[in-house]
Amino acid sequence: MRTHDLIDYLFMVIERGGSDLHLAAGSPPMGRFNGVLDPLTEEELEVTDLRELILGVLKENQRAKLEQEWELDFAIQVENLGRFRGNACYVLGRIEASFRYIPHAIPEIRDLGHGPTVEGFAKLRDGLILVTGTSNSGKTTTLSSLTQHISRVRKANIVSIEDPIEYVFQHGQSVIRQRQVGADTHTFAAAIKSALRQDADVIVVSELRDLETMRTALTAAETGHLVISTLHTHDAPSTILRIMDAFPEEQQDFVASQLASSLRGVICQSLIVRRDESGRVMASEVMVGNSAIAACIRSKRLTQLPNLIQIGGIDGMHTIDDSLIHLARHGFITVEDALVRARDAKFVELNCAGFEK
Image (cartoon, rainbow, N blue to C red; front, side, top):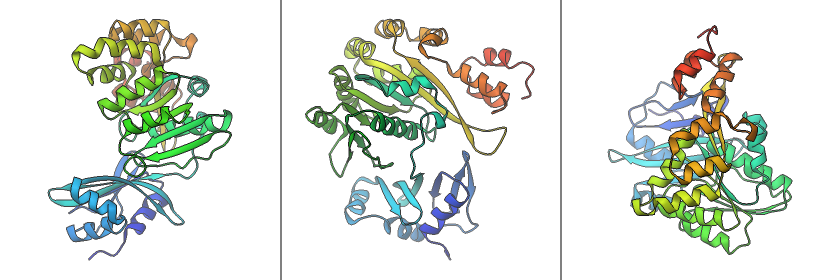
C-alpha cells in the first residue's frame, strides 16, 4: 500500500540534491542524483497509484489533452518547494510520468562553467545562437541564463516561447514576454511569426523541434532578430547537419546558405560526474560563426569544422576535446570519463598522459 504522495516524492528528490523524479508502474519511485537513478523508497508503484498521483496535479484541460494525445508536457508549482517541469505519457496503456526540478534562481553564465565567449553572445543584435546537448545536459539552464543576462544588461523586448514555461524571468532593463505553447499559442512557428510583429529584439525558442519551427527561426535570425534556441545534438558539426537534414534535399543548399550568414554561435555541452567532489561539471564545445566557419557551412564541408574550431581560439572557440583535457588535467573528472566523451580519444589520451585514470 502506498504511504507517500507526489509532494513527498518531490521533496525527497530535492532534499537529496536530485534533479528528476521518475514514476513508473511496478517500480519504486526513482530520483536522479548526479546523473544516476536511485530508488527513493522500497515501495513499488501500482497502476492505480500512478494514475491518482499524476492526474491529481493536472488541470481539467490538461487531463483532456493527455487522454486525447496520450502525452503531455506541463509545469507545476509546489508551495514551499519549487517549480517542476513534468511529462506524462501512456506506457502499455497506463499513465506514467517524469518531473524535472527547476531552481528558483537562474545561475549566472560563468557560474555554469561558460567563459567570456558565451557571455559575449548576449551582446549580439541579430543572428542565431544554438545551445545543444543530450537530455539532462543543462541546455535549458544555459538558455535561461543567457536570457536573464540579456534582460539585465540590455534594454530589449524579449519574447520567450516555451513548452512548458520552466524558469520565470525578471524583466530587468528589458521587457520579457513568456508564452507557453498550448496555453498562449498553438505552435512554436506561429509564436515566432507573431514575435516578428511585436517589435521583438530577442526571440528565445525553447527547442527547434520541427521543420516549420526551424524554418521560421532561420527567417527571424536573417531579418534582424537575435534568436536563441536549443537542439538535441552532441557537437557543432552534428548540430549543423541536424538542421540541414531536416529540410528536403532540394532545399538544403539554400538552408546551408542561410545558416552560413545567420549562425553566430553554437554551444555544445554535457555534464560529467566530478572526481574531486560531489556533483557534476560541464564540458563544452563552443563554435563562433566567423568567416571560415561560414564558408565551410555554405559549401557543406562539415568535416572541416572541428579543425577550424581547434585553431579558432583567437575568436573564443574551443573543441569538446580541449574542454575534456582541461577538466581531466585539473582533476575535475577522470581521464576515463574524458576518453568516453572525446571526439578524438587518442588526442585526449596523449594530452592526458601521466594523469591518473
